[in-house]
Image (cartoon, rainbow, N blue to C red; front, side):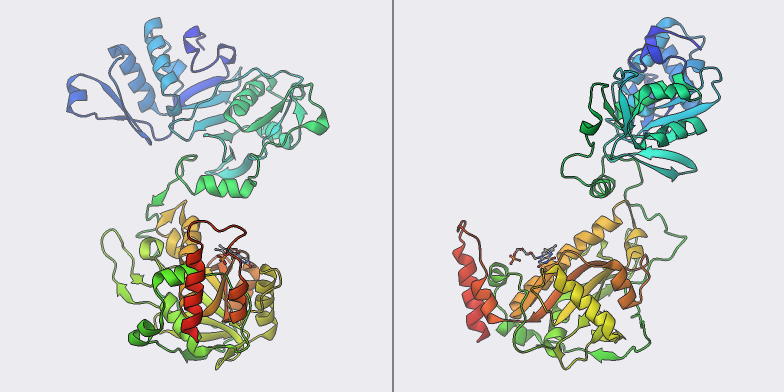
Length: 522
Ligand SMILES: Cc1cc2nc3c(=O)[nH]c(=O)nc-3n(C[C@H](O)[C@H](O)[C@H](O)COP(=O)(O)O)c2cc1C
C-alpha cells in the first residue's frame, strides 16, 4: 500500500491503509466526440453526464482509463508504479470529481476483507471528515435506516447524498449497536477497531450519524430529525423527487414486455357476490348549460360543506355528479411512447393512466339502497359490492370522525388507486403521482358539487384496511388514497361559513358568488 500525501483531498492522510478508491457504479470511459478523439482527450461518462478531462497528461489519462475500465480495482494498485506528478494529477482530478468515486473500507492487515462501502448518489455528493474524539458520543441519526438492498445491508438516509453498504459482521454489529448513544471509545471492544473508527468518521461526515462531544449531558442529547419533519414524510419526499437518490426515476416502463399493463377499466369487484348493476342518470348538455353557474361563480362560491340538507341526496343527483366528475369520455389504444390503453375523463390524470377508482358508501340516498358500490366509469353504472351494514356504518363513521364529528354524510366516496397501473410505467414517483391525481379529482368533485348546489367536502384521512375490507380489495393491489363526502345541501350552512376574520383581495367575490348560487338554486 503506497502512502503518499498526494492522496490528501480525496482521503485524509490519517485514513491511509483503510480505504480503497474505486470507480462508482455506472462510471465508464466514453468514446468522446470528434474533438475529444482528435485531441486525445479522455471522456468519462457517469449517471450525471460526461466529463472531458483535457488538462491531464497522457500518462495520467491512461492511468484513469485503466482504473475506470477495471471497474473494481483500487486506485492505489493502479497507480503503484506511477510517478509522483501522475499520482498528483489523478488524485487532484478525482478530488474534484469525488462524486464519481466509491470508497471501500477494508481491513488494515488484509485488503480483501472489506467492512463497508460508501457510494455517492448525487453529482454534488461531498463531505469533509471532522475529528471525532474518543470520548464523544455517536448514534444513528433519526433520519438513517438500515435495509436489505441488492443482497447487502445498506444504510440510507433522506438527508445524505451517499449510501453505505455494510459487508462485514463487525461493521454491522457496530452500526446496529448505535441505535442509542455510545462513546466512540467503545469501539475498542470490537474486532477491527481502527478501521471502524475511520468508517465511523466518514459515516458521520456523510450525515448518517449524530455526534455529541463528551461534555453533553445524556438527557440533553439532540434529536437529529430536522424540525417539523417526520421520518416517513421526509423519506417519501426525498425518494419521490429527483435529487437525493440514485434510484431509477420517472417513466422508465420497467415492466414493459414482461408484465402486461393493468387494463384501463377495472372490472367491478363483487365482495359479497351481490353485484347488482344500477344504471345511472346521464345529464344532457342543454340542461346542464342552462342550470350551471359560471366557472368563477363555482370557484369563488365553493366551500367545504359538512352538513346535510333535510332531503336526502337523490340517485339522480349522484348519477349526474359521477357523470360530470369521473366518467370515461373516450379510449385511446397503445401508441409508441404511451404503450398502454388510455382514457379521457373530466379531471386530469398523470400519464392518462386513470388508476383511481371510486367507491360510494351510501347511507342516505333516495332511490338507492344503503350499501357500498363501485362506480363503473365506462358504463356509467354503480355495481353493488357490499351490503353489510357493519361496514357501511364503519366507513360512514370514519368519515364523520374525519370532520370532527360534524358530518353525517349521505355518501362517502372512497378513492382507491390501482397502483400497478402507475408503477408499471413510473419508478420512484408512482405513489406521489397517485396522490397528486387525488388532488385533481378532489377539486373536480368540489366544483361539480358546488355547481350542482350540493354539499361537498374532501377528507384528509381514512383507514386503508377498513376500505380494503369494505371493497374486498387487496391492500396492495388497490389501496385507498382519499375520501370525499357528498350530501344534499343545507342552505343555512353556506350563509354562515366564514371567509376569514379580515377581508382581502376581493373577498366580496365570494359573497357575490354565494348569493348567485343561492338565487339560482331557488
Ligand atoms: C386534501 C384535503 C383534505 C381535507 N381534509 C379534511 C378533513 O379531514 N376533514 C374536514 O372536515 N375537512 C377537510 N378538508 C376541507 C378543508 O378543511 C377545507 O378545504 C379548508 O378548511 C378550506 O375551507 P373551504 O374548503 O371551505 O374553502 C380537506 C380539504 C382538502 C383539500
